[in-house]
Image (cartoon, rainbow, N blue to C red; front, side, top):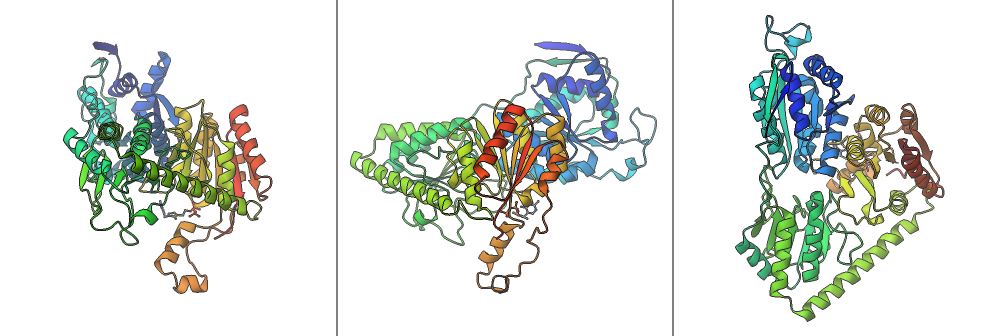
Amino acid sequence: MLKKVSVESAAEAYLELLASRGVEYFFGNAGTDFAPIIEAYARRSAQGQVLPRPLTVPHEITAVGMAHGYAMVTGRPQVVMVHVIVGTANALGGIINAARAFAPILVTAGRTPLTEDRLPGARNRHIHWAQESFDQGAMVREFVKWDYELRLGAQLETVVDRALAIARAEPQGPVYLTLPRETLSERLDSLEYFDPPRVGPPAASVADPVAVERAAEILAAARNPIAIVKSSGRDPAAVAPLVALAESLGMPVFEQAATHLNFPQDHPLYCGGDPTPQLAEADPIVVVEADAPWFPALRAPGPETTVIQIGHDPLFSRYPIRGFAVDLGLAGAPRLTLAALAAAVRRRGVDPATLDSRRRRWEAEHRRLADTWASKSAAVKTDAPIDMAWVSRCIGEAIDDDTIVVNEYDLDTTQTRLRVPGCYFSQSPASGLGWGLGAALGAKLAAPARTVVCCVGDGAYIFGTPTAAHWTASAHHLPVLTVIFNNRAWNAVKRAVTSHAPQGWAVRTGTMAMSELDPAPDYELIARASGHWAERVDDPAVLPEMVRQALRVVREDRRPALLNVICKKP
Ligand SMILES: Cc1ncc(C[n+]2csc(CCOP(=O)(O)OP(=O)(O)O)c2C)c(N)n1
């Protein structure tokens, strides 16, 4: 249906379009380029139009993280606007994270005014000359699905719909739009647009039925199939079909650096995060949305092992190099492919004795692993400084099925019992640090009725621009619980040194430059400065109660909370 509204400027028409396309939030980190947008907001607000809600976010790392967090919970892109080239530079780490995590975001940036006089919006500040680049989109082009510069108000509907549709089309991802000040300032009397839009993302696709049958044939006849999964839970509806496939085969499911809840941790076929001991024996291996299912330099399956890869893009074609075998690639929405495959396996049937013995074997392995994991935290529960396994166990036991966990580095998921689709998010495969604090705020914005717990290392916390994140949590009433696993080090860097040169100088002398975060500030004071409830915890005995209390604060007082947990130093 065609709709016509009265507006004064292209900026106002742009906001009207975003609102009509279901964009609820406009995460803004403003500069002089925002003037026409802020002016348009004032007019819309005077008319009682609130959407898309403008949220001030005082660092781009936080702003992009929030849009990422919102998208990962809802699947829907929101808008981030940053300040010209400099804001884009600060946003880039978050854009790279979103690209590799397939998070749809409409990232926009002002563009310095094109003209030096005459036109409305023309340059009138000293920065307007130095803030121009030859090709602003080039800065982000490798990591967005599409970029463009809005040139005329008359293009708005096409450009906005195209941007949003491309961001939402699978594999999803960020897109980038620059908005010159003159274009936003262009006078328009009215905007005529289709509502609902005429351009949307294509429907989900499913792999070729012949290929699905071939995979089912291989799997039904297999001796020792295993699955390795990383991020198919990005679509919560893909969890049940993976369970169905695993059950139809008595097939264990391993995760590899999981970024989502892909398979319920309490399912008897869930076998944890380390498939390496099984690689030599497994055949076939079903890889589901996993960019690096094993590390060939360390251990790989045998040369004859059949590898079936399932995912939106089993080749990960945006990665320059990735050599994992794809003997059979089933491209399409994993929820559809997995369901089709499970049905095809069921139709063929698996020899009942094989199914039974396989199931018993892997269920026993599941129980063995669960016992090992429980013993791991039980053995260290009184250690001081606190062991990260104990922190993880305390969090795992205190949260409920309605909790969303955002984990940037140190929550040990062997200590949790996560089982609800859409309840767990870990950092992007690109691992640009600083994602967690913002992503947790975006998740809370997307799911205000759910509890959101953000687990970060002290390193990840600092990268997450905490003053900006805490300010945002307070200003926009987003009661998230942040738990800092504070080991006063970048342990990931230390581990890399140890695995690189196990008997080398650094290990032998205990000298690891550039990996210490001592002396540590009192992080809880940073949070208190923004009015958060925040405590430091040194004593492992009080930790369970402190976690429960912090959860009460975010749930009942609806106040952001933070625990600075002093952990063992590596
Ligand atoms: C933007 C960015 N810079 C540097 C790194 C490299 N890096 C990976 S993990 C890590 C340390 C993280 O420290 P912390 O959050 O304290 O967790 P820990 O390693 O101590 O468990 C660093 C510096 C990165 N991933 N991203």
